[in-house]
Length: 638
Ligand code: CA
Image (cartoon, rainbow, N blue to C red):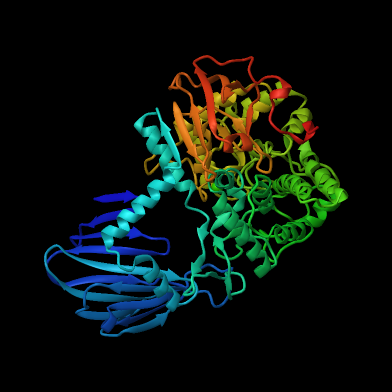
């Protein structure tokens, strides 16, 4: 009874014998309701709770109003204004609130209100409702509706939306997999493109404007929202840098606007700054975009925002760097200084500091400044316990947290445990290998994550959070792909002489933990991050270290994939022998020249051409095993 497509949704409501359909534009939608024959057919409009308003204008077959439904972190004047225009006269109109039905009333405002529109319908009669919203004003909502739907009926909007989605999803074409694999790939590609949301609108002069969810003003320029960078810096933003550089440039300008309007770069915008998650990962997004050649935004303002983060604590814990003074003085955020998830903060600040040093170099910032951040990027070493050879909370006096269990989620870490966070040294995997005592120990430690039992300590949360349960039921030891901290881990075998284990595990995760059905994800989707992991992995490479120009090889899923870049170039990835058994990589070549390294560079991808994977059923234990084939690590930087 339900049809779900990117450009169309339909459901048969059996209790009412009504079919409801909806098809979208960017800021609007058309609903179509098919009714049975009745004197009393109704459409009920719910403007949600936490502050709403409806005003029915029968002469214009229109309802306008707003919903304020939000959980804080926005200015006092925050409203989501809406307009709904019907193509049939109302035979009755009423409003309601949580307590009362207000017969023949046209205006209602309160905590939770709505409208009821009555119609006399013939059997199979369709009523169309054009709906739009705006964060700026009711007038702008009407303008958005006119701009996006005027002169178009339901079917036209639907076929336009279908064309648009096909052209977006068509930027990557995969062939030579099972139908299920192709469905899963495009389901992931679709989800990798849903965030961040455009929060800007086009005014009557065709200018780009936005309501600021930070200072409440209507201002010129781009604004995007709904994104947790803790999740998306890992591969969803690198996906945009690769496939959507123009959009990424607009997003960067939106970040600059956020800094101008609030004094802070966002880390979890929804739509204002939300007090949620940790890290200083905006630096990763910005450095990755700039270093990969994306321009057209105010990088100096972004640099200022990044610099401010490095020694400031924000008005909410997600912005700035909670524990910045400790981190800058001691080289880590202490376990016993009243700052939660401190070892995770240390690791993510250190990675951000690497991104800052690279960006600073590209921007020609003073050498001593760059050196300072390059040194701080080594702060991951300060929370490495050389005894347990794991990351561990560290006290003010330099001793490690005790008691300590690598199975304990949260506490010194964020939505993960030491088994997951030990690998959060994106900038210097080689340095981590050295801390552990070399390749053999490092790779066996990686193996251990899969080999230890799926046991856990949930006492920090007091309940078994779903991320823990998802790990437990996967039967992959303590590997917790359902949450983000560990998602790059499988690729790290490439840094220590065992790339075939990356190939094995990456295919296992793609096969076992993803599908296109309602249970197709092994955890929260998280703004497209978990999908972007699949999209990259299915193509055969993954951006382990955003802020560098490298993508680390795994095992491509399809026999053929074609990427169409915005610069007009095409990259064709061929792996003709690929199948369920031939998932090991014997040889890789680019435009006919063999690549003996375990990574490919951004510029090589963007130049297009042919990337060839020779696939086989047995692991190749002499390819990509020598140090000169390893991907980037700061400790190796010449
Ligand atoms: Ca998550």
